[in-house]
Image 1 (cartoon, chains in turn red, brown, orange, cyan):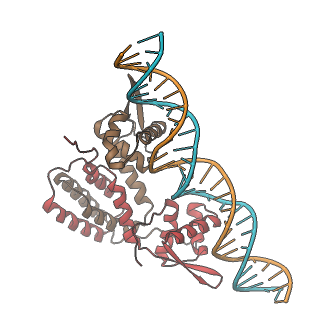
Image 2 (cartoon, rainbow over the protein chains, first blue to last red):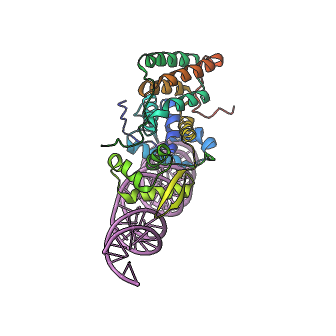
Length: 142
Length: 142
DNA sequence: TCTTTATGACTACAATTGTAAACTAAAGAT
DNA sequence: ATCTTTAGTTTACAATTGTAGTCATAAAGA
């Protein structure tokens, strides 16, 4: 799993990836079973998404008898890290801290997540500046 | 500012919003000056994005002499909160904690951000479960 | 071996997005 | 009262995305 960071995965494709990541590998049928309720998708929709994901290099497809077995070529955690960084990269730096705080308030966290988060924050605390500057405007070239 | 949460703002549009949010209000010219370097955009590109944002209800446009003054109709912090929630909503619940930890490691945080984050985490710690279940597969309807 | 069926491949098509050219109308200058 | 400049409007156009129909083919059963 080389984990190419440059791959763009759309929302719909993301749903397919989640199933495959969780199962480790999967057939189109299995994916269909897992998503038809939640997404109200027809089989051809899944086929299209699988095709695009293979083409993008996010999945491998190995023929196993009649069907293909799809396996992830990119790793889940690093893909999640990548897209969240992309998102926050194009937001006002000054407000990222509060946004993450608001976010933490909404998500489910386990005890070990808490430990991990506390550690990260303790580390950051050591060198945190008083204020983070807004980076939304071009620097004045006076 | 009513802050309609349903508005979808694309990446390019986001850049325009950031400038307007930071300035409070702006003309197309001012936006151009702030983004031409960073985005390498031509003026018509900005015009298009402004038009789309007004149409979407993200901006108001008041004629002031020759030009329009654009003002945000949605609030920056809540828009940031909204899009980050949207992003994490379609990710594996089980891995969100570690993703946010990885993210915190990368971003700039001020001392007051740190205080705020510690508070949120302390709150969450009270009721945090041992483990957060993966929510990527359909529940078996046995 | 022939037929049925499951599965993937190809095609489709509208909406959104990124990017910008061309056109038009109004404001300021002469 | 014109002309020029400037700012907005309309049009354009390819790529991506969401969603799915149709076609072809290979496997499985009769």
